[in-house]
Structure formats: structure tokens, C-alpha cells
Amino acid sequence: MILMAHIKVAFVLFTNMAVGAGTETVVQTYASQLKKLDSEVEITIVQTDWMSSSSNAPILKSSIGDGINLLTLHSPHLSKFYKWVDTKLPHFMKSIMSFSLYPFIYILINHKQIKKISKESDVIYFVNQSDSFAWLILNEPIRKKNIESGHCGLISFPKNRHTRGLLNKFGYRIFNRWSFSYHYLTNSQALAVKRHNKYDFILPNGADTDIFRPLKKDLSSQNTMTNIQKNDIKHPTKFVYFGRVDRGKGVAELIDAFNRYPYDDTLTVIGTGELVNLVKNSPRKIDYEGFIDREILPEKIADHDIFIFPTHGETFGIVVLEAVASGVFCLVSEKLKGIFDDLESIGAITYIQDTSEGILNAMIKYRNVRPTYEKKLQWHRYIEENYDWKIISKELYNKIVMISKAKKMNIEYGL
Image (cartoon, rainbow, N blue to C red):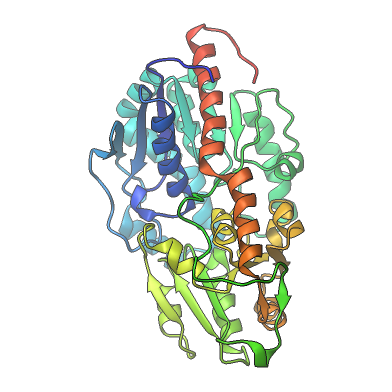
């Protein structure tokens, strides 16, 4: 590992850390892991006060950890304005406002702070490509110290996947001119948008395998996955969904499917979002847990049989890794094909349709699947060896060092 003292890294969020979804979790994890790898690294997390659809209270404190600074910028996502947008405008119009109007207002409100962070940072990690427009306008040299992630995609609002794919290809070609490197895209996604830039590097998300692991009480002497007959099952199948409780995650279709599900099994929903009331008011009782602290969450997840993730679109889906690491079999939206094919090959997940009918059929078909404890441990070891945050963060740190070194040497450094 190459060590360089006093590297200054800025992570730029378009939301508040308290939203607690995958994007915020990734940024906080990277920040804490980088500090463990190099105590001298200076980290600033730049956030807004926008809470998206989360009902959590925003975090506005100056620091969220030892040596990790938290800077809050005024958000253009004014709550009353976006509440009106949510109720009055179609989805694609809301997306246009977020991806087009957002950077324009952002730059006007926060230009002094943006320019200061831009000048002082050696490496700037953007989770949303829209933010980089505003920052690049203020400080073009950012392109030599910029990591563009794929967390939120570039153009996601067209419902037609073919149209969205064409727009993304066009967008990534534009970014190809000035972006230093891309992070988080999978190989299949990079190929789909024709990314061949010499600065690109592929790095998946990870899971904390120290806490996400099978329950020790779940003991079995068998070595293979078993499909147990109904009369052999000692308890009802316990389905679980955890993550953002939003339409884009397929939660509405999941609720509809469960209301038509013919067996006496249970469904637990963990998280906050725009469809909380739909979950609470479901004709069939759903165990709604709301927001659960991540110190408690792993044991809650591991106590279930099957995780359902019927998202309508995702750049990755960190929750799938966490579920597999916990030894929970996963029903994953076919929209994520190409991302988790390795997990499918080891029998930890299967792809399903993200429609109500597709979810219902999958729940019925796989309800009796029970992985043995030995199989769960195999899944956990696979995640530990390939997706543990310690491994992923070390790779990112090495990239950050290279970018910082190139910037300080005033050279164009190809990764």
C-alpha cells in the first residue's frame, strides 16, 4: 500500500446522512474505513439537509466520527416545494427537477463553500453526477481529482429502459471528457453504457461481515440446501424486506402480492419512506419495524428465512449482500441481472419478476426453501472473501492515493 500523509478527501452527498439508505451507508462506511487504513487522511462529508422520503430526523452536527468532518450545505430541496412536486407533477417531471434544477440552485446557494472545498480537497467523490456539474462549473481543475460514482446513475427518469440506456450512453460520453474516474459501476453496467475510459475502475459495494452473519442458534447437520415439505416446517416462512420503503423499490407490488398470498406465513418490513402508510394500512397484517439502528438490524435480518427485493431499478443493492452474509435466501428483482450473478451461481439468490404477480409466484414457489446452517456459513464466507468492506475500502484507498499523487505532481495519471 502506498502511504501519503495529509490526503484530503471530500465525499459529496445530495441528501442528509440521516436518510440512512444505501448511499449514505456507503459514504459513512468508506469514511470510517479510510480512517482505519490511514489515520492521517482528512475526510469531509458534504451533505444537504434534504431527507428525501425518510421520516428520520436530519443530522446537522459538525462531526460524525473521530477525524471525520460533516459539512451541511443549504439544500434546494425545500420540503414544502418538493411535497407539492410529489403530489402535483408526474414522476419524470420530478426527476427533471432533481437532476436539472437541483444543480442550478445548488451552485447559487452554496458557491462559496463549494469553491473552498474544491480548492482544499485532493480527491472529491461524488455519489450523484448532477452535483459534479455545479462543482465543475466553479472549479474546472476538479476533473483531475474527481471520482464519479454510479450510485444514483446519470439519467434515471425515463421509465422505458431502452430510452434510459441510450441517454446514459450519451451522458457517460459527455463525462468521458472531464471525469477522472468512475466508481461503483459493475462490469455489465460499464459495458452497457460503453465506458472504456482509461481512468475507469470497477469497485462493487460491500457488507460488514463482522456484524451481518448467520445466527449461531440456527444449527443443522446437513450440508446442502433442502426444500422441506410443508408438514416438516417447524415455523411459518418468515419473509422480510429492508431498505427504503418507496415505490421504486417495488414495495407497493410486494404488499399487493402478500395480500393475495395463500399461506399463513409472515412478512416484516424494515425502513422508512413514502409508502409507510401503505404498509401500516395493509388489509393483511404486516410486521412494520420502521427504522432500526444498524447495531440491531443484523440480528433482525438473520432471524428471517427469505429476503424479498423487488426493486424496479438499482445500480447495485447493498441490502442483497447484507442478506446473503446473514445467511438469508434472497428473491431479487430481475432488473439486477448482471450484478449478482455470482450470488445466483452459489445458490444464495434467485431472480424474480418485479410485478405483483411475479412476486406472488416467487413467494409461493420458494416458500419452503431452507438453507442449512453450513450453507449459510458458506454464503457468509463468500461475501467475506469478496465483498467485505475492509477489502473494498482498501482498494478505494489505493485509488485515492494514486489520484492524490497525480494531482500533487500536476500530471495526468491513468489508473
